[in-house]
Amino acid sequence: MLAASATQSAHLGQWSDDWFAGLSNGAFATMLCPGWMLGVIEGNAPEVKGWDIANVFPGGAGNWGGSYLTVPANGKNVEAAQELADWLTDPETQVKAFEEAGTFPSQVDALKADALLTNTNAYFNNAPVGEMLSERAQAVKVSPYKGKFYFQINDAMQKALTRVEDGTQSAADSWQQWATEVDALS
Image 1 (cartoon, helix red, strand yellow):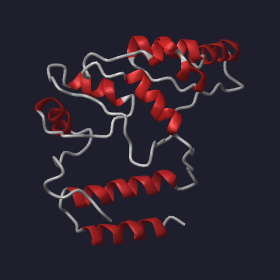
Image 2 (cartoon, rainbow, N blue to C red):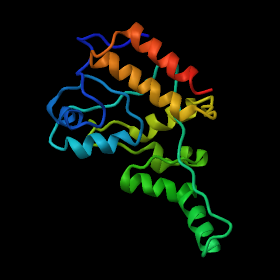
Image 3 (cartoon, rainbow, N blue to C red):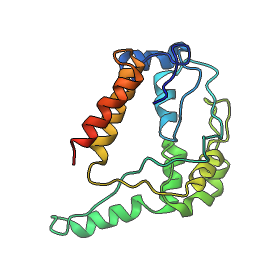
C-alpha cells in the first residue's frame, strides 16, 4: 500500500475541524475536487485568494457513484412525487440549478448546454468550471461496481489509509488488517 509521505500530506482527517480550518489557512497544496467540492471549499474559505481548479485526473476520469431518486409505489402522493422527480432530473432544470447553486448536472444531455459550457467561477480564478467538469464527466467510461460488501470494504480501506496517514500503523500492518477484515466479510 502506498500512502503520502510525511512531507506530502497536511495530515488532516477529511471533514474534521482541522481539515476545514486547513481549507482557509493554506494547508492544502492540492486536493481532488469533484464538482460538489467547489461549494465546500468556497463556503469554508470565503476570504482565501488563489484557489483554482485544473482539468486533470489520473487515468482520465473517475466516478464514485451518485444519488438516486425513488418514488415508492405505495406512497401517499405518487403522481406528484413522480412529477417532482421528473422536474429535478430534467436537463434544463439541472443546468439552471448549476447556474444558481453550482450543483453539477447528472443528466448527460445537460453536458452540452451552452449555459453550462460557458460557466466560469470567479472564486476559482475565473476557471471555466462548466467546461472542465463536463469534460471530466464525459471521460468516465465505467460505472463503479458496488457489490454486496462494497460499503464495508470501502470503509475498511478508508480506515486502513487513515491508520497509515496518522502514523498509528505501518503500511504493511494496515494492509494486513484490511485484508483480514475483508476476508471476514464473506
